[in-house]
Length: 596
Image (cartoon, rainbow, N blue to C red; front, side):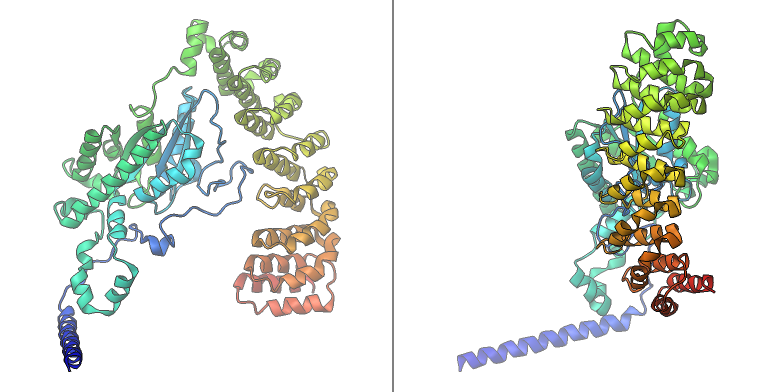
């Protein structure tokens, strides 16, 4: 009887609880319509689960550095590919940020890190600047990027580029409840009332100024400061310097100087924590809204001003510049223009003077052609800084330095990564011609350095059919991991056209690869070879059913470039006109039209 009574009591309690909860839910639903809806969260405050499918991302890339103007590098960032090994005598600075650092809305070379690097080099300051920033990254992702990407480059300094939207973005994502509660939030007015999501979220950056004392804003600043401290500690533990640069929003340009309370709070925090800090609002304010392309992304003019301000700030090292080194040895700044003085400096006992001389000759460009023999000798210098500088200078001289090609090719196997890379860049600038360049480029395809292999493949592709002797070596290179990369062997073969017909069997193997990128690049190359690749028609027709739309598109295009098609291939193309992908349908129609 006692057990039965307990069961009855439990059932009654459960029913009462359910009735009570139901009443609360009904009341919440009845009154919810009377509640003013919260303002939508601004688009620039990302929801990580929606935009990143997690809490971190980079852009997928197979880049190895060639062509050198590729927009996305091997790390999946919008920057040139940097050698892991720091160039000798160079201060490596990492600009760690979001889309403002990346340069959204402007060309890659106009982003402030790239502008800063060029400016410092022209001034004779050996500072390499790495742009490590992507759309939507907040301080949390930037800290992850430091651990996952930056650390292996061994930077001397990390500059955290902070945008004010980082603060609400951290709050909105880190204060978000677990997934189960989010589901209940969508279905239950009572849960929505209890969770008070509008009270947790920050809708826009303006609230950092207008609602400074609101609990959610105070919590947001606290989360931001925790992330900055954690990043600072990790950077300093690795022996690098750390600093903070703070960017304003465009709406602040038209507001009085006093309306910079968020800037002052971050500056006070950095001062308490002993972090070097620079507020970029005063530097950008005179430019007005012209400093921006939208709400917070810099225009080319704004990026130039930021680079100028950073270059003149205390955040960057104040070491002796190349002109100062030369002037101290040669006696005057005017002597920097005298070829005989610079030629003498190339043989100085001090490697810094010799390196400074190569820098000065690089700045003179074609006007330094008379010292080409001296620079070729400097390629054999005991100092890697001098060897790399000599290669840069020969590249700047350009066409008159064609006689330097043999010596530069020899430097492609230098033990120092920066010397190898500068030699490759110099060779690409002075110009390579067939047939003389083919044999050394073929030999270079066997380099252990992917960047150098990429240079060789890209250069052979540039030579086109005139480099047909390289086809066997390029076929072998297809088996390498970077063989189907943008600067890989497949691209080189594609640019050779019918002269690459011997590569068809290897490219057919590429069509069978489990890697979709390899398959579509193999199809593209077969299409570029054209009728000389007719043996690939059956495989290309089969590829029209590939699960990857890029493969189907390039297979259709390739079939349009072949000779007369057998009936089954033509039938496959007609069927492809009904493909789910519009680009595949278009390519199929054009291929059939090309066959008449």
